[in-house]
Image (tube, rainbow, N blue to C red; front, side, top):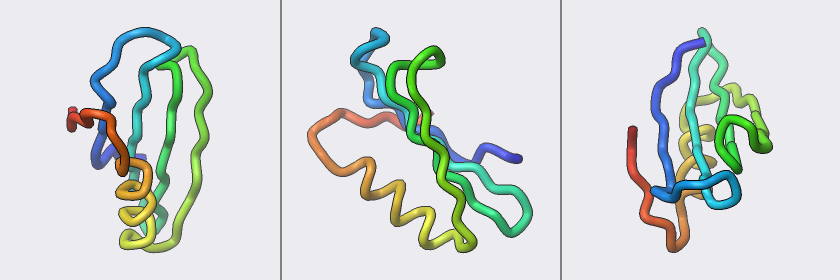
Length: 70
């Protein structure tokens, strides 16, 4: 699985940090929504199409956080 993009909400600390990652693996796309850093909770959802996965990433990025691409 290849990491395609990684976004971070710019906040430090286990309770405040949020990461959104996009992976590709052949014809599969996976969006990971991680709350609380590496030790926090993580949800991974698999998609068959890139455009649908990118829509999910955009939905997760919507809001007031100061998102940064890593």
